[in-house]
Length: 103
Image (cartoon, rainbow, N blue to C red; front, side, top):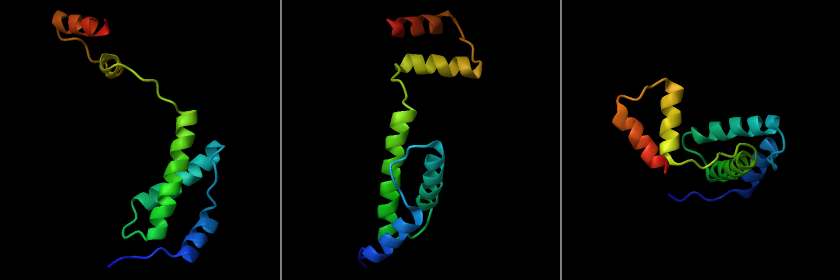
């Protein structure tokens, strides 16, 4: 069974959610709640899928502009995880491996 896209239903969803380019943390939070609801909704309609895709795109753009993540080398990530969790290096060879990866 193929579901058809209903423009009137999509227009109603757009009017209800009123998505636009995200400029504030409040707008980000509001659209995130709607996107999460749609993410976990069962049997989404084609219109809900389209709205979800639009919201995710808007959220990704906002996050890229406001929550940029620096690129890190794998050994730097591992070292950070170990430090954050209070994990200690088991022996001297582990320490040398991290130093070797830093080169």
